[in-house]
Length: 464
Image (cartoon, rainbow, N blue to C red):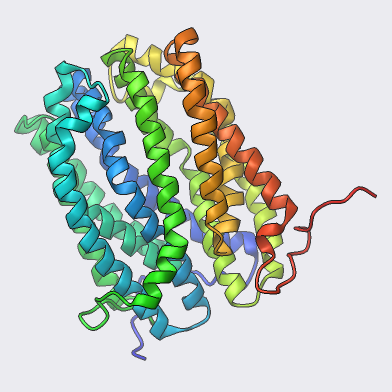
């Protein structure tokens, strides 16, 4: 096997040393990378909200759930790749690692072509289905079509990130995201503020920046890590590997897709309250995506940590790592919740100067922010379960929480409390998810597989 340069490889050996220290070392660049990834669409919203107006901001927000629906299922397939890469990398099975990287990349290229065609064709029908207001319809359609035209770059970025993170490298994705994010900000200002292309300019800026991210990711996979490669020889679909990817990725894909369908239903309800509420919700989602990122990042880190330690035989490390990560994640979520509850108007004003939009956004923050700790718990517990290769249970919990919790609650309370009723439905969904995954985790059944004993402390608790 060819030895590759360690320059900027950024790999963290998660099977040795202090569990919390290694999880934090892996999480920090992962978190920074996720922040930069969110800056793509957030910068779009800030620029169009300030240089075009709240109508343009609402147009970007109205298209978001539809784009997520079209790609979320297939991104779930790539999410399963990280577990396979972690297991093969931890076990030093280099040939299998090569087959995994080639198979998932080839698969995503084929899927991206189909999603692009479907997205371009169905854009008007989907916007009408969501009752998108007429005054923002054309702008939302333009933003969606350009986004779907470059969807291959978004998919490949997620695939390459999953491959690198599975190998314990969260620094490299951060590095090339930093470069492409700066490019995105520059292009946003040029296309929207200078050339006045409106929301279409923001979409083009994001597409170009994502293409740059993919180019950097491809280079680092082939020149930065021993055992990783992506070339003509392995750029093909290996059937046994495909079966494994589908087994792990399909539950995540179904979870993402059905959650997106639930969000579309909620978005349709929200659209009935007009452009001000839509714009406020868009701004809140952008701020929320940053504030909840530490919790989702710790969930991803725990998934990789568990997968590598199970494969490397370090099962006794998992209990300590999970316990300490829970403490850190819950503490952070409480601090962030307090900030948004009292001072959430500060970040909202980055998106708009219209006080009606800011006030509507604060209504949502005061309802959902106190429940961030539920999201922290769910991400850690589900991360442990996914790291063991059991992706079905988190999928089931999320789907049931969405369709038996959020959707009916939003429908019922929106007629009583207006838009605030829809916001309460999100808090209900997070609470149900956290309770269900917490019960499943402490029962310990997620760790009973292949004749292996459960982790210490993960057994069901019995009364004395």
